[in-house]
Image 1 (cartoon, rainbow, N blue to C red):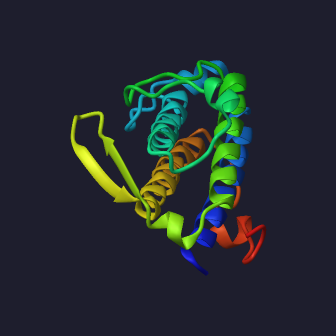
Image 2: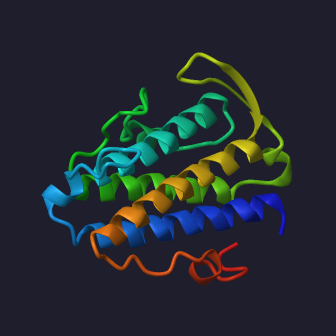
Length: 180
């Protein structure tokens, strides 16, 4: 599998896992979604908003570098990331809609990736002011790892609420060669 196919698979996996876990979150009450979880982020909703922070800021950086084409009308509907503590959605319905839009964008972006585009350079400044240069492939790998890392925290929290979040195995969620 080449690198661009790998990212198409990861985008599909992330979309499916986000949908699956948000479906499980629908079983929680409003109070449970905002309950102090004594974890890295204070609540389940804070975890979801942080995942969106990473996705949105990475998308902004790709667009700013003219490395991806995203319809301006679609971009205008997305919030802008400024801080790791941003709140993009204050209820689950809004979160689901925003998550679906962002996941769809990453599916579209990865569908146009090539080996050459994975080697292009992304230049950006971190929120701490550090200047960075990374290849698109490295950049996207971080984006997908970031989502997976924080979804792992979410599955732990969901299990503490006694909820079954289902299978998270990549080969089961995205069978080899599916939609690549």
